[in-house]
Length: 316
Image (tube, rainbow, N blue to C red; front, side, top):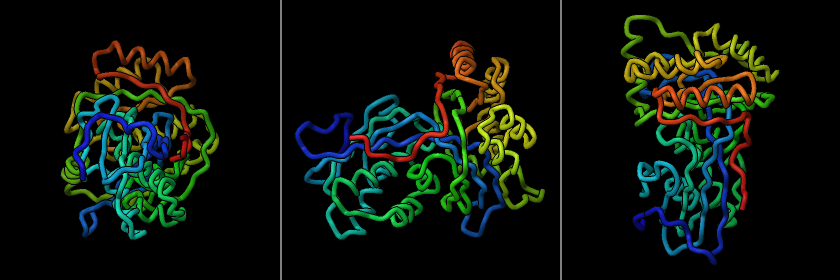
């Protein structure tokens, strides 16, 4: 494939743009390691209103370019999930991968908010529309599952329970708006390293099979932030990977404390981190928590977003 850059596609060529959301893991229950090295999960996904846009444009060969915050940290080669998605779809339909994929980033990079997975899902839908391949939703979800555990949810959006590695989805009821603040850390955390640390910390004690909290599911269905915060408090934050993330990045504890002190109803590490997520009572509270985090010196920045958000959608 042609080496990428930050240059967006040129005007005039036929293109399709898809907008795709970030996610927060409202609950992430992690089971013991499986023989294949993965862990069974009960992953309560919630899509939030921070978006990447993926534009697929007719081209002579496969090319990936990236723009936006931290674009330099995103691979613009065949390892990018967007490129892999285009190649997988082209292989399904026996065609060449002749497309320029431009990713306009706004989801924090390497932050545990599924930005790379979002780009994969966005590229898959954009290429399907650009090429007119008419791939059914079930087949698109199968391709998503082959690409990565979080990719199917990026396509679906809203709220869902992910089983297996997180790729087997059951759509959940979720009312909103729920107001969240996301504290972006300096640098990323490697998901495999976080899972390895989870295994190290769990050594010598039984790890139960993962199940979602009924109280968390009920609170999502009601859209009541106070009830959701109480449900998360009852299960110690809801993220079984949080102790591992804090072990690898102890400074995240100060970020969690700063958001809680500023009035957040609940605080947790998002997925494998290092982004920290804060649930607030309403939009003014979210703005106040974000301002406090910005001035606390414990994070690189803070973003406010509503949930639930729709999944991947064609916007141009």
